[in-house]
Length: 138
Image 1: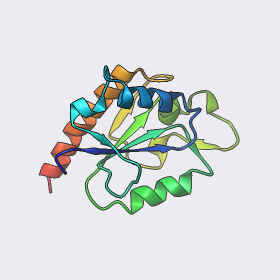
Image 2: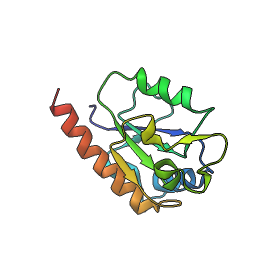
Image 3: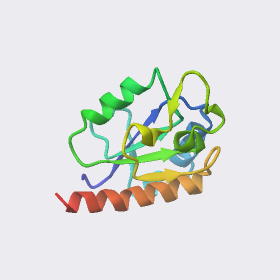
């Protein structure tokens, strides 16, 4: 792991409520992720932490599988928001295939619709601890 864990967000079909709260967590000085030593990145190749929002849709599943399958180094997956954890209000909708943990191994679940920035930061703190443990096991 580099000195600064890098976070990449994957939206697998969310309503964007969680994504707005992520933006608040990243950009607000009150909830600044950089205080945790994290960097929010725009490409998956260098990611240490994958933050996934939304239930998995038929259209998003191939991308999700491709990103995770091709990632070689240790990484942590955060399932963020009620929809990514349980499908929430989208359960039983025709394009919804299931929650994130049906398709990838999830290390941290962050509940909420949407989760508060404080909960997101707690989830990221937990993810960083898990990432450190995974890196020490190598």
